[in-house]
Image 1 (tube, rainbow, N blue to C red):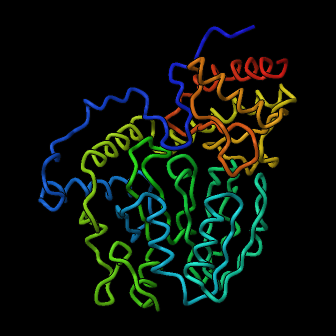
Image 2 (image 1 turned 180 degrees about the vertical axis):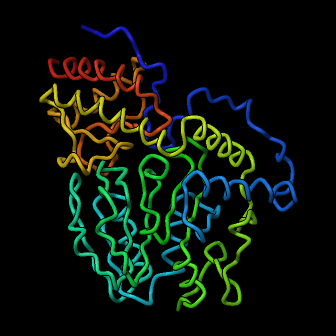
Length: 372
């Protein structure tokens, strides 16, 4: 039977992601629009972005938060180009974005001592291969594979190298061991449902020390430069961004942070995401034609939930199109480089009730295309 009840919000895209519940663009504080981001007002608002982020995430003393250009990609590239080189590098990659960082390290930076630890979609590489004397580059959550690292136990507390963590679809939705992370990057449009084009760069004191003592043997574009005269450009982490940000996007981000406080901070955000994951887990357990791409439950992402369906790829695409035509679920097809299947965003801005309402429709769509 065709279901009757639909999700109240049918946006399940993995990026840009759903806006927070109750979002209204008219409610944004737009006092900064038309003003210079270098004005006292502009800098104070950007400083709020850094300070409120650090407070909500519970960052350790001495960690710095900055707004940088070009989304999460720009933040990761800035970190790799500015920091990598003095030590061998271990790159762990198991999905599209992690493999992209591996390509940059080997083919663009062309570093001599690089160890690549890779795995197919649905699996993690052997994290036990991480060498405490090396720098480490990895994604916390594989957005295109639905596979996350289960914890930070594999990262040594006595490490000599730095950890560079792409956490764009994990920050605010998963508990992160900040003392294990020296560089963490993310973007506003993922878990917080913010707007695009801006990246966030979080540095530990160890990362700052590397920046101030290591001079990369390569030209650095202006938007990658974090030091001047051998010292960190502190302004980047106090509201003086490297290039002009969209103050409308900044207002949108601060609105999202306000909502995070309303739902109980990071613990509340984690709980919302994990509740949605549990709903899908129950559904997959009850239906043998659909399963997680990640076979290990401890490694299943609670944000980018990737599912395999026992249908040919063209039939899965029909399912996706059918659900969109019914205005039930938009943008839930697997990432273009990933195995055929579904990818349902369950980040914290998604109401678990909408995920529950979606499940009968997925079964209906499967039955509909299977019998054609």
